[in-house]
Length: 418
Figure 1 (cartoon, rainbow, N blue to C red):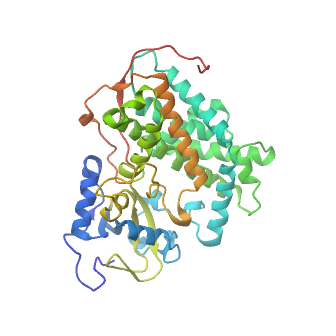
Figure 2 (cartoon, rainbow, N blue to C red):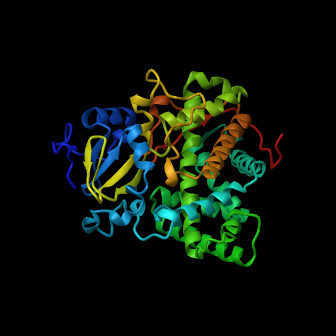
Figure 3 (cartoon, one colour):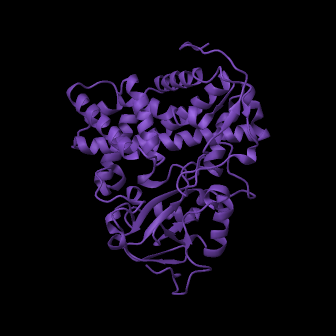
């Protein structure tokens, strides 16, 4: 894989950039600006083990890549670097090969699969969804409200989305805590990550088998009722992907939005019962601090050009979602396109984007989670200086490692909302 421009010259400036390091944690916005200045809209990067790839930084270029699934395919089997990828390569689960999930299907089969998932999620009653989110949010707050302090990330944000999703799928309430532990262990690479993956896989497979025998009004049953001919294994894989993709970004959306509201005076009114600013803060996070920063990826199906670069067949392109959101060519006077504008890339674009019903589910869970905690703990405030807050050291998902807060102790609702 040659890092050259379309006219055969060497890169616009500097060497390929390792996709990692502390700057993705401390100052990603400045890092993306530097990459754009030095390399243009498409930058050469190195993944773990010095594996080469292209990082698409430009808004228009990312729109082109995600809008052309034939030229820029989701089929990881096209990758020219497979001969040099070891079996223990740390990014292998993210890239995938031969996995029977929606992430790696293409063409008509992908469209059928996406339709099955969208239809199953679209049938979720929005009032019931909000009710589930309120219920679990209240339970989590009941566990901390008498203490007067807590870590919103560990004790709230990373516990809420999966509980709601598990209920939508059809899991019994008592199975929820085990799924929370398993999924958080998997996502955060903890010592029990493998055990967590096995627990999630076995739990999902059992639920699919049960619903095949006895359908109910839930997401799993609706996917099984689809007539596109997908196997139980394929449906199980899709359900696992949906739960993982829905949980961590939504948890980070909650944490990042609450951080913004607690540190920016523009959103102070929301802490005293306002609601309009909650939606504004959530939308600004999607533009400025999106939970999913970069995504792998797309593979060129033939030689082409992109952003002044010569892209070879089999090259890997990484989707720089946050970099594209901050592209100065799509900004207004350098400011965020907030105030309801949703032309960001935080949910992707094109036929491989996050399905619209899934986006709506995530938004309801996140917004409900934020509104409930502001209702229950109206004097919520940071317990540490804002500048001391730290982020997950990852170029892929951006979220807080913790969000310590304090508040006036209050009593639990005991399952009854006022």
